[in-house]
Amino acid sequence: MATHLITGAGSGIGEAVARRLHARGDELILVARDAGRAKELATRFPGAGTLVADLAEPDRISWALGHQTMPDRVDSLLHIAGVVDLGGVGELTTKTWHHQLDVNLVAPAELTRLFLPQLRVCQGHVVFVNSGAGLAAHAQWGAYAASKHGLKALADSLRHEEHPAGVRVTTVYPGRTASPMQAKVHAQEGKEYDAAHWIDPESVATTIVMAIDLPRDAEVNDLTVRPGR
Image (cartoon, rainbow, N blue to C red; front, side, top):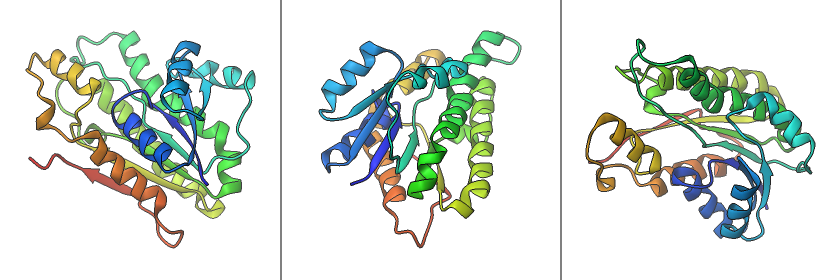
């Protein structure tokens, strides 16, 4: 039975992945931003473990986890949490830049660093849920796209560094997916939101589970998922 450490399990793609892995009996360790959120996740996924760490404060993650019981085993580390705030380069404040870079890039780098010892022992798997914005940047998406371009670089570097240890690294690039984040994006764009127009989180979850279940003789490096309609 594998042990998966997941960020972003509270909604969207992260919730779909956690539900899929929980249903088949795998062990889950869910990262929550505060104790209240951790209690909520533990209720939603009976038997799952939780760790409290605010991804918006990556400098404090090591301290926070140092006061909690760390798992002995991590077979996969799934970076699914993310934030987005649109705005032109001439409008965005440094606070907005830092928030997106911290949550989307620096926190995944720090969590990966902290759990690499367990991942190396297990010859585990690190999955970064990126975005189409991690491959191409458009107007109003500068800060978010910068964080996701950085996440691609992090994944690519990690893959080369940890290949000798048997650690696999996959980046998934979903297109627009029906989620609370997508609803927020539509609101910022001033557009009407219809979840039926976008990818179901369950479909993205299927690709992620496929990647981590792949036999050891193969590895998915990069996987792009686009709306089918």
